[in-house]
Length: 482
Image (cartoon, rainbow, N blue to C red):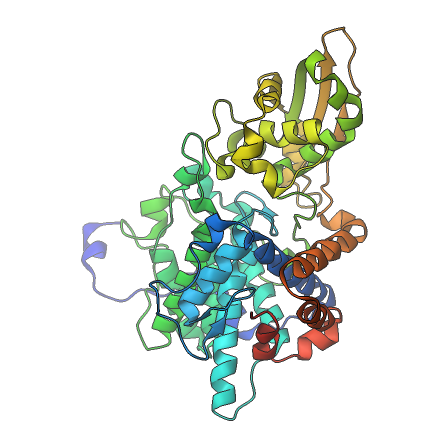
């Protein structure tokens, strides 16, 4: 690009990537029954994660208004709490709750992420719009509108992630939450394609958080609220765009100053498919274990080995662990682990716990369990290596497996069998096995947080696809309000 072009004040044509997102958010009709059914399960699972997170003071201390007393009468209901908030802060609260325990859905590709993080913004704006409509004597949004928004947010975040590894340049995946939330919320607010494009351009211009808080030696609890922060920011940008604030059509491609030159090392964003409902249909659920997804099958392997190993822990000589390249980069950790957020992203810790205790729950990341000397003793005996086949199948669009394998060797020369699991229980290939467990997770989370009458009303509303889809959003949110 020559200096004359850089000096030109002629407004550029919009980047095609922004056009595609805006057209999809505003115009595309979702016609997949499977996507809507999966979205309902995703909604239930995400809210279950939020209710479970409310058991932890580290989460609840951050919830509520930005400052004490700044609540909003007839505002957005925050599920499981007594808070009524304006929609942007409501999105922060709901998003943080859903993500806190690292137990909500996952998408794995060149980039990783958790598309249900967008539900914070989607529920907040839908409840806000519905309550406003009721006050004006108009019809509120239906929960089908929420499910449609979820499908589209999943698709936008997931399709961008398929071929674009933002982690490779140190950027955190929550930027994709902000982008998807901005697009879908702007559309829900009634934005035109131009207004949605403007909101999305602002979301790209924001850049991204750095991944420093996800990795050793500084992994910390910010990773539990970063998505709520991104989702609320996406909604804020949508509201700004709907006030007539202009967008920036070459936010991605502008030479020198655009996203690709500044933050993507000059590389062009790559896309191999358009937007439909592929991501929701193929989403990965974290059903059994609140742990980083690249370790889910490793935990299953460890649980399979528990009966043979737990009584012989002192005799363990070494443990061979095979994982994918992504697992090697993200969760292969040695040395001290300082907090729960550090522990739930350590492959060795996630294997040691089920070998010792025969289970893995959120409580196992707390200090009271982490002081058990057997955990670090086992971690020190683990050899983690990349399995090339696991890495290859992880990126194969026809498979999208997340394989791990474990074999334990004892000091007397004996060994266990090599246990390998390629597809976690939350994978599309294991839906028939996984959905009943997902519903058990949901029912237990609801029953554990609400009284019997309120819990029964929530379960009844969520039990039938048609009943849920036809329910006004404000009435659904009232069910969850304390």
